[in-house]
Image (tube, rainbow, N blue to C red; front, side):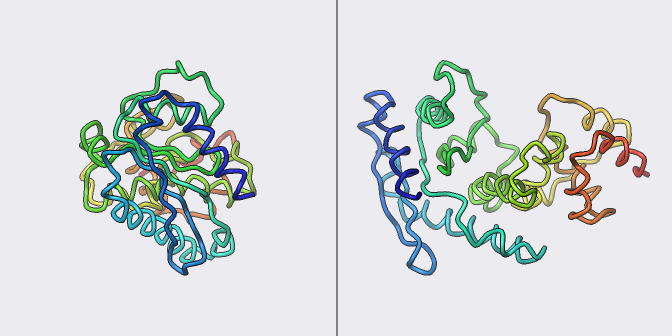
Length: 246
């Protein structure tokens, strides 16, 4: 199975434009127990930072493992969620590689702030410098490591739900969960009123991650995480939670 996904990653590289083909290189680095090999594919300008990126990934995987252990989900992380990681210094190359992996129209326009995704067991990410440039409010200690953790956390969420991705709940909830796992914005000073929370929770369009983070943490302090996850699929999930806002 691993060989299949590595092959798909190479197919992506071949399918990308010539510029991308000339500026990526694959490194196979053994992680943690020296039995797991996760290839890292880098743009040429990032080649001399392979050890740095490997350490980011090791830390992200450790974050997921520690979180799972805390909530008795260790059995769910015994199998790796990713088979390779690709890091790009040029956003258009990131976009094209991700869209090819997702088998989507490569002319699809992705937001500038769309900086990471885990698709077909390949973690596709922009460079830390680009991430800091387009999402400055997200920069904090360990922010790039947290970005990787966030993306892997989505897969843990789906695993908790036995693969039922449609049961992850509203946007604010599943993005809030990933931020909670990654410990993003833990020192945020954001404060929201009940009216503001209600509007955000009922908005089907993507909004502020900082505000999602506040809302998720507000409820997880009142209700157990396992109960929140189990009820997120319910039609009246938002209504039920809103009734509990002081």
